Image (tube, rainbow, N blue to C red; front, side):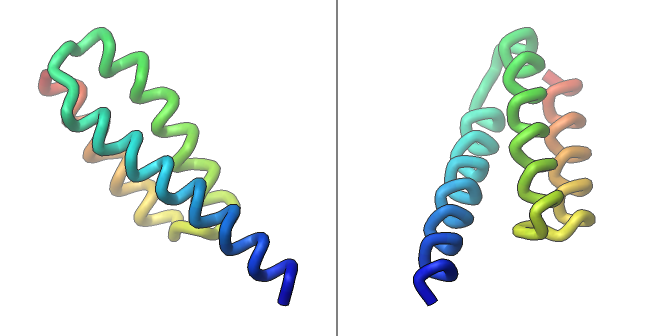
Length: 73
């Protein structure tokens, strides 16, 4: 139970920090800055999908939508 509690807090931190990074990316208006930040956000999303915290299809859909957003800037 102690390990589960520790892991839950760990997972919650990474999920929340990734969601915050996604919101920051969506609020950007400069394309160059957004492209640099996109790589970091995709890395965080991939890490969550690899560990099973997010489903791989959710991760793929998010990455596609964020990439389309950055390309449209």
